Length: 119
Image (cartoon, rainbow, N blue to C red; front, top):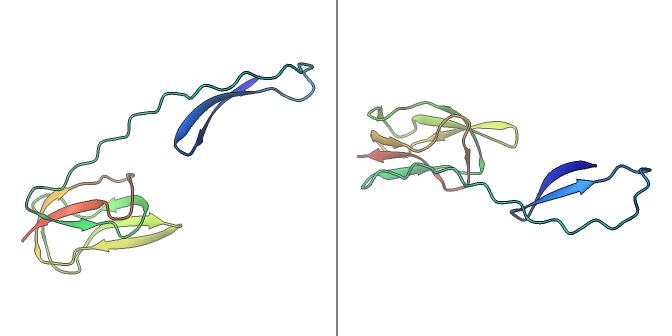
């Protein structure tokens, strides 16, 4: 028998699969849900700052700024890979980077804060 963990609709199940021809015909017991792993904590946007959000779901492949950097309207702050394409995330105002909310390799959802800017 081989053991697998399969996730369906956010629920993880530990299942065992028997290879064909091993001779056992007894029905398998119902699989018990495996415990869920804790979701990684994301940095919250800095209080009072204006967030620059991810335009779509994807993976951060590069972060171009750090806290304290001065940015202007149109500055590329991060690169997001979605559907095998790299997309620049640009800020929409001038200011100073107050917080960087993501790291290289992080998965983000649509609307998740990437950085926070103070004017």
